[in-house]
Amino acid sequence: MTPARRRLIIVVRADPVICGHAGEARNLAEAAARRGWDDVRILSWPIDHLETTGLPTKPIDRILPYSDPIVVERPSPVGDYKVPDARFATAMKGRLVELLIDGVPTVVLSMYLLPHTNIVTEAMAAALGTGLPVRARTIGEAVGSDITNIVRNCVDRRCYGPALYLFSTYLAQDVSAAVSQYTKELIIDAAQHVDRACGTSFAQRCAERVVVSYPAIDADAFTGVTSAASEQVWQQRQLKRDGYVLFLSRVAAAKGVDDLIRGYRSSRCYGKLPLIIAGNGPALREMQQLAAGDPSIRFLKDVSDAEKPAMMLGAAAYVLPSKPRPEFIETFGIALAEKLLVGGPGPVITTQTGGIPEAVADCALSVPVNAPNAIASALDHAVFDMSELERRALAERGRRHALKFDRDRVFEELMARLPSDEDWSASYPRQSGAKAISV
Image (cartoon, rainbow, N blue to C red; front, side, top):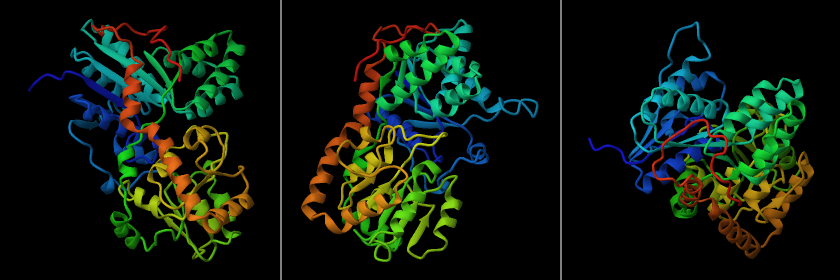
């Protein structure tokens, strides 16, 4: 077997988890494969373990295959019942060590600082401790919930150790990335709280070091969809082009599905166009109860990635009224950018929450958060009042904007941020890291 020349390892909660960053990991892996990286791996958790966590998942038999040479590894847990929480992470660290000590130039990208960047940090230290050659560079990507779910919790409880640990490991990577400018600002703001309490300087270091790398999307999968190719999906789902209102995302409290249901019921669309809520998540049962068996509201839990573009193309309006919650803030809005790439007659209706303005720019209809009446008005305007010319102009502008998130472009820009020294000899941790590039 010919030795690998370049390796990319992405450590992430991958498919079948319903999460935009699982899709982002897939897209970055595919972009690397298209550019001749001959060893591309996604390192993730065993599927049965993911299912026990309560994370929303897609139907396993409908997950799209990966291209060659991409391999998904899910190491089996190490140890017995005496180490219940560390068994899976230990297995992932061990597999990383095995890959890091073989001398192949390797980039390790971790998404979600806890636990994935910490797994990479500890694996790198262990690999270097073997005395064997390690030729590796690391990228840690913060997705937003790292801060809202971990650091904010630490600040509220005045328990700062975990926050110190998170910031230290984050800044120890060659590149510390954030998925939007909003996320970077969120990180700096949280670091300021920690600095005031602990006398650290994480906020300044984050301001200098953190770079913005928008989520990578397979633009071709969305721009290439046609009505003819989508007709079969619409027929199977008993839908008509331009004949339904669509929500397609994770069904969680922060996604605003409750506001959408209430707004839809008070709009002129109600009873004329069905509302399709496509997705799964922790708030699904609650939203089904809110809909109370309404025949105008349909829930689809099994929409596959292959069906998604067709579902978006045929919608008379795509609505994602996300709102800030203590446990989650929309730090970008991948599904919104995907809908902009699809185009089609239906405008996007969303809020200005978090990083959404970066995802949609001026290419969507905006409503306030927690505002069902505003959603109703926006639906009526989008479906009944906008002319075909207005719809087409908005769709064309949206597609031009969203093309900046194409996976090939994002991958190239992210790799360009890595240090350029040729020998790739590793020392770890690296407190200075790569020079930040403004975006």
